[in-house]
Amino acid sequence: MTNSNRSRTMTVLTILFTLLCCAYLSAGAMEYTGLTDYQDWALYTGYPRGMLIPLGISGINQDYFHTLPGTAGYDSGRIVIGDSRSCQLGIRQDLTGGNDYAVFAVWGGHYVPGTGTPILTDTFYYDFEQCFHEQIRTNRSCTVFFFATINDYDYSANQNAGYISAAVSAAETIASMTWNYEGTEYHPKVIVIGTEGGRTTGDIFGIPQGTFNRYIDSYNTDLRTAVNQSTVLRETAPFFTTVREITGGRTTFISDGLHYSDTTLQTLANYIKTFR
Image 1: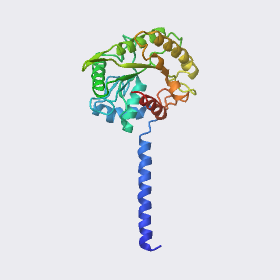
Image 2: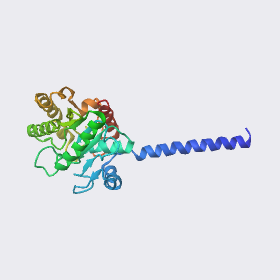
Image 3: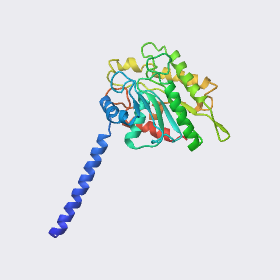
Image 4: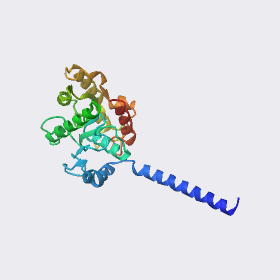
């Protein structure tokens, strides 16, 4: 091999190595493994771009995530509603450049009325309704993925009847929305998704794992029953599922043991994309 050819070969190899390193670093930079990653996203991306409204007491806590008109996913025909884990779905979509769903969620939010961090505020309803209308204009359909919240779950005594009732009532309110567009009346199709517990090893914010997770199955069983008994949700009740069912029992978490890992978020996103 001549010196010229050897030089060109080395140059090509150097370029390929550099590209591989850049791809690796880029992928690594997008991997979120702890709460600080989300807090940094809030500070440097969510707040400046208006996707995250700072309402909470520290960092991202209690803040409102909302997909903005004209941005990725807004007119997708799919909307995600829920608490911090739904916020995670919105953030993950932003990081990966997805265009699969809109998100309206509150970090630490509740469906139970009278809490300090309600999800279903007047602002939420206005933003949701505008997105619903746009999705009907664009797709003639709007499917809502209504995630039950881990904040409305009693891990200590399994007194979850009131929490379940509040979640079903909230889902019914959304499903009851209607809009007449070009002579046809449309309403959101609401699919209720049961909540997940936390990691199966170690404590979760100081709560022993065995204590925290012990009533999750009972909660979801009762939630499924309540959804099936709802006359408002009867159209989509057969699609009721849980996070655990979607992940095949392989739900994984970031370092706090409560919020979903990138792998779990991608699994949920892939599930959502199967619907129109």
